[in-house]
Length: 157
Image (tube, rainbow, N blue to C red):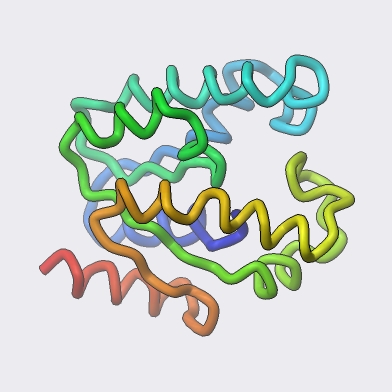
């Protein structure tokens, strides 16, 4: 969350000429409601099913795909990611930077009203999953979006 996935994804897509897909935006468009509303009305499990379904639509298409930060939390999604060859990049952001970037943002259902300690636990609970499926990771805390794209391109070459 708040690692710059959408911004970096859009920039990378432009540089590579590949189409860009933001899974969260695609779900919001399809469902005609915000991610927060989906969480509120139908719960996290339902939203994770929507993510998995939407991600599977792109399994054979070359594209730069931005996923939600919690997509990695379900076994089905982790299995899907491991079984379908793709370059998966983990944009790693520290909880401190995450909190600074999202100060006052009420649109993140799993980050609303969370203490820094709770955010730290959330990040820790996901990290091993990210590392298990990622082709490589990039620490984003001190990098601009363009610097992240440059690092991705270096890693890919």
